[in-house]
Image (cartoon, rainbow over the protein chains, first blue to last red):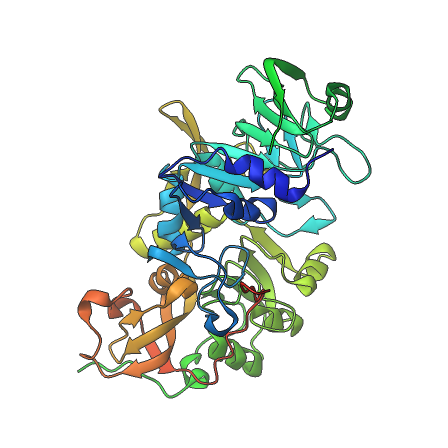
Length: 219
Length: 232
């Protein structure tokens, strides 16, 4: 069974370490916050100027002056701090954020990522994604392995305009968990329950390697 | 004592004329100068170049200026919430320069701080890097990016005083502090305007030196793009 969005988020949540400062992108990455174990303390960074994102507010505590990068209403966690967009990206660019989790439309076997533009079709802009991928110490990508029409999104070379070059360290898709090898290639380290390695091979256009210790994802 | 207060948005935007470059604070609809945007729409000024992280939504914020065809060019990082923007862009009616958000923030900060250019890694190897000088520092490639300045900056703060000192609230701070520093004339609209001396100097985010005109806005709508709650 391929993983659903929540399961992808749950698998990624296992990468978070106690004390980490983490930036979560829009989409599946936002769901990761729901799976962080209670015994792990993390501080979530919001690019629009907040360290310490709390849960969504109760209906009678909505504050329009308090939103996350996805423009959703939020609260502040205990010990939160507020700052400008310049300070926010100074801490991102300066390498102070431990882990960045973001979505992608395509990744390549050398760690390139494309997630901001489909020429002639979608022009939403890159937002903070280019700054994040250029400077994050560790980048994990959450995405679907194939497009809706069945084309692989794990490519030899990205076909869409790039967001960043050689920056992705790990990708979690609905089919499995992959490390990007420094010399190029996707290394399968875990596969989704009941998904065959053959299916993963057929769904991956870029170079695929299978780890000697490959195992099934368990929940 | 110096008093920078003006009566209202209409007075505050005096001097903004066709073809000017203006900065508008805010992230999404959070911390946007609602009163001045309304006054700009009423004034009918056109062919503006607007520097703002986002372009509002179809029915609010800068989206209303786009709809009114007052904007010649947008300089932004993310415009995904505005369908009219996307339509005007794809049809070639609107010029747009999309800039990585951190680069946009730093270019504005540099503009206010007298730094003509700086190196940043954001956008290396992407179409953002086309035509830009690169340099390698400690083995990593960086792009040369230039400062951004404007004729007018319009910012929104929570509280302000007659000297132009400003305090922001929550994530409504965002781009407002840098924009306040980077224009020839800076206009601040605030929810509460108090006499100089009433704000705690320890708490001021934007010192009054950067602000030329200030007024107390009214009827803030503070629209929410995605109302999300615990109970859903």
